[in-house]
Length: 280
Image (tube, rainbow, N blue to C red; front, side, top):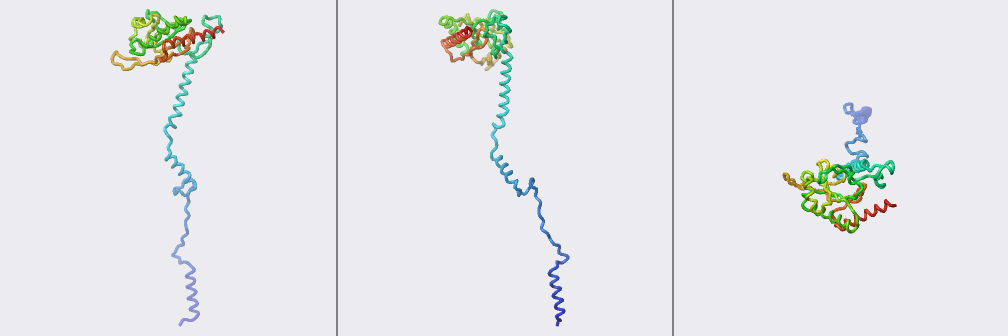
């Protein structure tokens, strides 16, 4: 039998073995993972949720195409308006130094943007016609061509009827002016034969292609060739009449909606307004 001393020693050894870990069993400590706040891959950062929501909103609600087209379009429009205004100011009617130095009426000496400009064309007799020959008289100007099938002849007839009404009803004399936009086919003889069928008082002007293009640009007249087949073509254009005062300033523009009687009445009204303002 074991003595009490031996039992006591055996018990103490067992207790020590239970309290102390064996040398071959390493103690394992828990490892805490490190996560960056700004660059977390696991999505556990408090900043990830709002950034994720913002990205999802952009993907689900993309901006329409107008957001990218509107700013460049507005800039281009502003540039065009600036160019047109600058071009008008360059061609403004210059101020006279003294009222007695020129025979131009007083209202012509104001500095303001003008539609029109200098030109050099030829009439049906081959004479040179410049803007200086039109000064001092009221002018009704129309841009067309003799081969126009429908609108052109109606407009020339309306011009001729309005000129007759102005002289007979309102005692107003005005110079009707027809400027061709087809100088390749409208020779001086062609213009003379064409205009004599309406009213021989209508002055026909033609010239080189560059000269015609220049005066059309100065008066903001649009025209281009269409349906061109060999030497046969039509010319698409804006069918407007311009009323010019003795200073060659554009007073009013008339469209195709005016009848001859309405056109004559409107011209007489504008002339009376100018005459009343010049006498005051």
